[in-house]
Image 1 (tube, protein in one colour):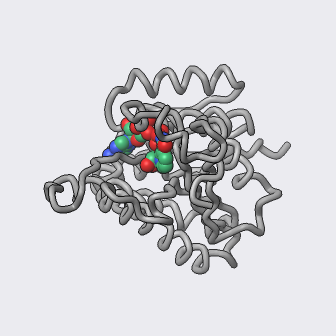
Image 2 (cartoon, protein in one colour; image 1 turned 135 degrees about the horizontal axis):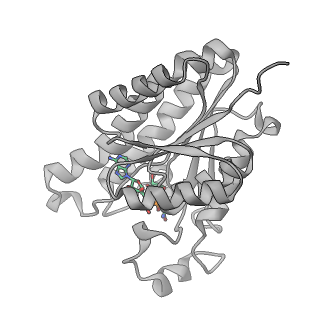
Length: 247
Ligand code: NAD
């Protein structure tokens, strides 16, 4: 009897917010989910509990996506422990905001936001590409933002990082399309998570045609579709989930 093929998905920053909702969605689709976290392991453990509740299983992989050596070490160790498997789905979700007008922005806030979003894109995606291409099936989805499409005042660092991952997505999509790997970006508007916790929601929703913030589950549903077999001909796209904001 042929051994059942295990399907693995890695979600960076999967411990809370949009990342957690994506982990649960992928678990519902039958993937074993590798939950990346950088700290606060208890949050990742809660995600893992929810993955199991959804009927699948997974592991916690602790590394800082902006740390190239640490990321490579953890991914190499995973490969060594799973010689017959590969990671079919990567969701580059880890990200931070350090908002300020550029005139007042400390260099470390510029660097950190880019190192995590743009550096993280390279550090995690690059080592997973060869196995996806070899097996001729892979899905790479990166969390961008409407800030990366439009450029937001007070967020030059974040806008640059998210605009950067959109461009990298479009470039990589063309490099790997004939190898059966799709590469797409999802650009949320305002989604209710820890990242938007301190914002004045009542004021901001006046500019959102849907008059509300979105939920992590509404973003995860799109990620789930992009991972599904039905989305195999969609690549190099950036799809926004924003309640009509900026459209
Ligand atoms: P969040 O702050 O709730 O979660 C971010 C996750 O990234 C956390 O799990 C955090 O631990 C992880 N992370 C941060 N730095 C990391 C690092 N160096 N290495 C590994 N993990 C790291 O935020 P969220 O709202 O769930 O955001 C998820 C993604 O969606 C981010 O890329 C964010 O930029 C993007 N996004 C969010 C919104 C929104 O309104 N919430 C809008 C547009 C885009």
